[in-house]
Length: 156
Image (cartoon, rainbow, N blue to C red; front, top):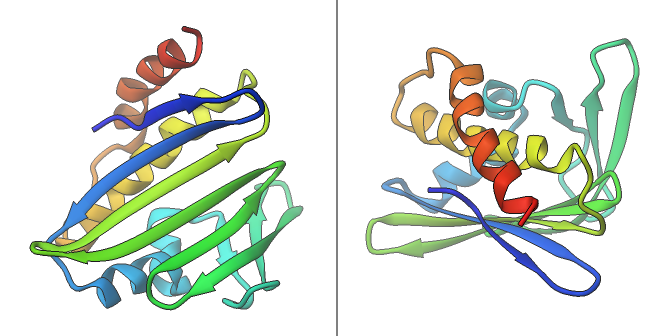
């Protein structure tokens, strides 16, 4: 399932939807507990899961980018800054378990935007596998399949 990309005058939004056959608390833990977060996004670490709390992004060269958590409602909302953009996870219960909506609110579409959106796509696929106690063989292969699709959507 590709994200839907919506454009308005001053913002572009990539919106992902996923359903998981697991309780909302289990999905929440996968998203926000550092022991689980590292399994699907190894560069991220939550310092404090509160509004105004910080996330650290390991740049891989010994430096870190600090992001601010702008909203937390346990176990349904987690929102944080992502450079000039905003990432928001919303969880809700449904008949099968949990419905997740991930939105990236982008101020500007750049050369890197399709890469980020493809990355979030793969992260959600990895989360699904982890919740099912499975692993993904090659994230890069998955990314290379969806990246051209997002690049095409963004250049329309």
